[in-house]
Image (cartoon, rainbow, N blue to C red):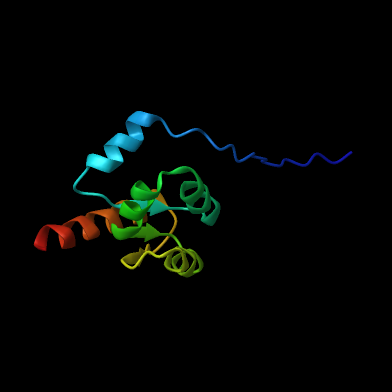
Length: 104
């Protein structure tokens, strides 16, 4: 018979370590990178309110205009769409956002 290859993954929500939450609270230079709407939804549900507000106030990078609209509906205002979903595109966009922040 025919053999078919399939890749299957399961999204598993990991708990946010207290140390990571404290780091987010204290960090001055923050850029959030979102590759799925469900990750943003999980962050909204699991991060303490003050930390989530800080994340929304920071520059955000997303991989699609659909995600840009989703994050904007959550309250983010400074959202950039990457030219593509690959790591090189994300890194280029992060460097561009960082340079823009350094000028402020």
